[in-house]
Length: 112
Length: 117
Image 1: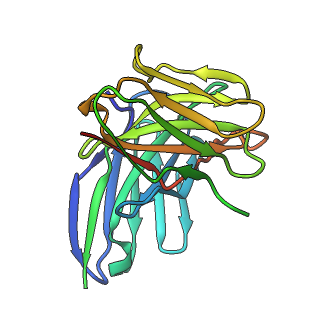
Image 2: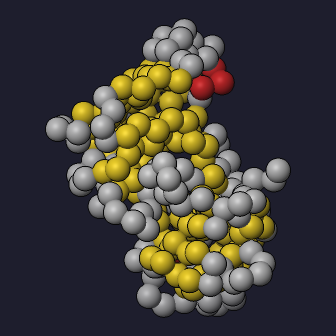
């Protein structure tokens, strides 16, 4: 099964509202990353949080990590219609020659 | 400073034909990853390569699929005798590896969409 499991699977909000997306994982990680995918395009890296960090900010993005619960959340504040996309969490395991494992993604729709 | 280049963007094949997907990593990146994306299923890891070496192919089907990353030229994902179930978007990503930062951040291409008739 996938390492990262996001929830909800789909989220629809009004422009200006905040969007919170969650990710749970199963094994030890070096870091956890969030990516965004617009329809028909490749994934774009948004933000990375290391296993020894609890919270990180980047513009309107805030990510938290709780290694004891093996979970992370991505908060997008003051959402815009342009934030409509799919969002994926990816876990980067400990050890050399690592590969990122992605969840199934969350489809975010921001209504204008 | 081109990113990850994949071609073709769209490929149509009939059952039994071969599909070849190419990926040129971002300049300065020596690590290449291939992922497959099916609707409603997210991205599934297929293979991880460095120049002339397959590092991890645990996600590759045992038959019909192969990948290479030669010393010169792009990485190639090859699917022989395609079947309808191979229809999917195939994404290539590249990175510098973990490096001194210890973090492996991927840069993705736009994907190659394979349709098997």
